[in-house]
Amino acid sequence: MKTQLSFDSLDEEVRFLRGLVAVQRLADEVLEDCIERQLGLTAAADVFLSQCARMIHAKGAFVQVQGSEGPVLTRVWGNEPFDVLTWVSAKGAVSLEDERTIFVAPLTLGQTRLGSLGFILPGTFTDGGKQVLALVEAVAEMFDSAVLSFIALSEGHTPLERLDELADAGEFRPRARLGKYELLHPLGTGGMAQVMVARTVAPGGVSRLVALKRILPSLAEDENIVEQFLDEARLGMRLNHPNLVTFFDFGNVAGSYFLAMELIRGVDFDHVVYWKHGPLPPALITAVLCQALEGLHAAHELKGDDGSVLGLVHRDLSPHNLMLGFDGRVKVLDFGVAKMRDQRTVTLPGIVKGKPLYMSPEQATAERIDRRSDLFSMGLILYEALTGKRAFDRRDDTRTMEAIVNDALPRPPQLPQPFWEVIDKALQKAPAERYRTALEMAHALREVAEPMRDQELGALLTGRFPRRVMELDTLELTKSQRARSIK
Image (cartoon, rainbow, N blue to C red; front, top):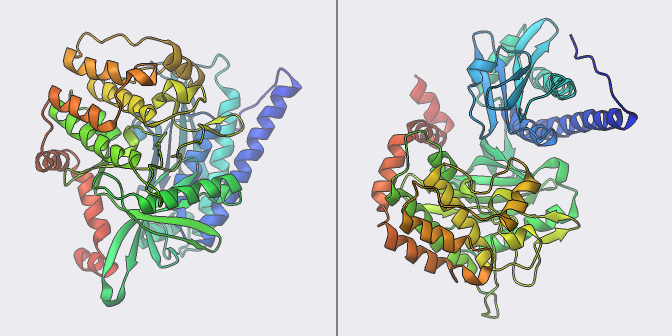
């Protein structure tokens, strides 16, 4: 039964209807693009889930599709802790103990239950969240249509049998290519682009796995977004340092811009900070931060053709953009919103680029920024790694930015004084009172705790994330090798 709605005003009803139209438009664009480019249902689920979650201000989301003998596709978005198995059989709005509410809607084709889709939102809802639930149900209907479109291209007598056939084909994509790249697996989706694992095969069967980044189809005609993507490509091709991701290729296929980058065998720092194995060893934290700061310093010192420093500022640092390789090497990712000297933080009217949780005060207030803004962000990451908490998180972007600009940060009692001194200097509101360079901050950290060696860091990560290691090993196999391993 559909959720019955009533509205207190015409404006409220109009806002809700606009949300419904936006969901329907997004579903059509994602579906058409993924079928046209043969990206498959997995890629469609990733893009659709992440974009719908942002649309309804959700902090976490999941979708699970069932075949004839159990789940054949499970995708999760966000960093909110929840167990998909617990909620996949739920329905409606359920208030959680920690002032969160989960909204779950079933996926169905006629009388056939295909699975569930759910979103986690902060807060509780006095009316049971009827409007949110109605939107979630609309999202589920759109996803039902996407599933139907994909299984229509498959063989089988029933929808469940067709899902089984698609699953056996591998990632629900019997054919998936973008130019010379074979698309293997979605890595994640942001506000501007999607990243896929891809393989390029050279003459003689020599292949290489890469991370392929492409603009989302809904933004491909946006001139500002395209120019920002081109800026990232221009910068990426110039960056060259062991602690910065390597860019291999850039191009345009059928109107879709893409970047081919080094695929890092590892996990992002956010997974490590919250890996539920107790406090992180200080030597691990300093190893990660020092390597990242060295890469950041190389970017800050990047010179143009005339030999002058470009004044590059990353602007979007977070634990998600620090990748920890299983070889112990740390890489700084995603210079997608980076800017050079003489460019302000606000690049479009009223839009401040970067993640509010990790902004500097001058970035939050749209003032001119330099490399010291990135060092403030690194101080916030260091604080989070040591405490397991985000320094100025107020669970609202505007309030968080206000806290970064105005609030003092007290020292947690459990935080050792030497680490606090580094954090306190990095988080000074006035840029002139912070570290002057990333190398200066890295030197201060090394004085506090000797960084873990690369080999030791790599071994520790490999032991803690065996599933990720196995996934990457599987991706590196060619189709013929995978077939032989099954026999």
